[in-house]
Image (cartoon, rainbow, N blue to C red; front, top):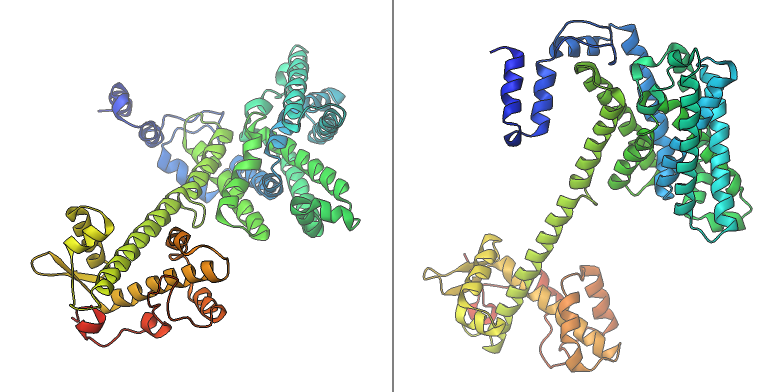
Length: 496
């Protein structure tokens, strides 16, 4: 079967096959290349294209890849401050509002001059931000409403100007349409020099003004009381963001350029709580996003670079969203489940200790019936909890499966959790002046999170008490931290 037949066969069963699989098949069985992608027009397959990409044999590829990576670096660094200051909508507004400036820059001398376009777009971006400030200060409208008004109004003006330019004799050759959806292949060496300059200037600005920008992002009011130029830093950041937006538009397009500002920084935001690390991660993700977008665009058949750059960034974001060590969704679920299981085990150990305590520690085992009666649950639920303890090596079930025995480690944990519970009850009654019949539920919550240092501090504050408010013995530190000798009549655990 030929390549087209393979793809057609899969397409007929599209409901059963994920879209990503079809996309990969298109890449593997790629048709001859088209000019809209990065690279020369060459009749080749995906594997040969990959080899061409990694050997950097094409001049156009080198220029386009370098340009994409520079804009990824610049957007990632500036986006870090945009994200932590919760100004993500500002980036989207700038990306749409600068379109009139792009058109005016072209109309200056009726050629696609990168410098003129940069100057025009930057000036219009500044006017747009000024309009947002005027609206929010002189009316009762909030910033998000003002940003929406400016975004739509300026973008409409830009569309009108571009339409007018397209009607001019040189309009159809202007390439301004590439600013809508982006085309990295259209990046010239002149554009590359402009990207290099703006990225270098942005980097110098961030390094020189890092402490001021840090204060602006987290303690603006404090910075103003110290006399720091907070307004100047804000407007300078918006200016450099405008530079980044304008230089990135040709590769990514006006519709998606804000994603290059937000996605790498948002991904980094999920991975760290330190600003300097966030900027480093955002820069790395910006570079990787640009490189991967250019790579997949180079492989495919007439596939635009900008959307693939955004998709690559979204892929990194989804990985961080699910697997970030502190903020990942799946990691949080796993931690919550682990915390819930640990709490259930500790409550079961405490109940077993209570059963033995009620018997004056006579006997070495706790029956499932006693455990179920104390916890007010069924035998099956108690058996399930006992099996959980056995899997954690905290208890063992008898051969008949009706009795549970502590292991040495289980006994230590039982003593520790009982000690935490009773110390906290005593603290609430003696220090916080709670009634003794109102402290149990509070202690149930706190006992699982008290650390060793906090427990020792409680003991010192309470003068090393021996009994809780209800007259029950509080296990001492030696009882909780060291396993007792295997004497069943005293300890209640079964030695192995």
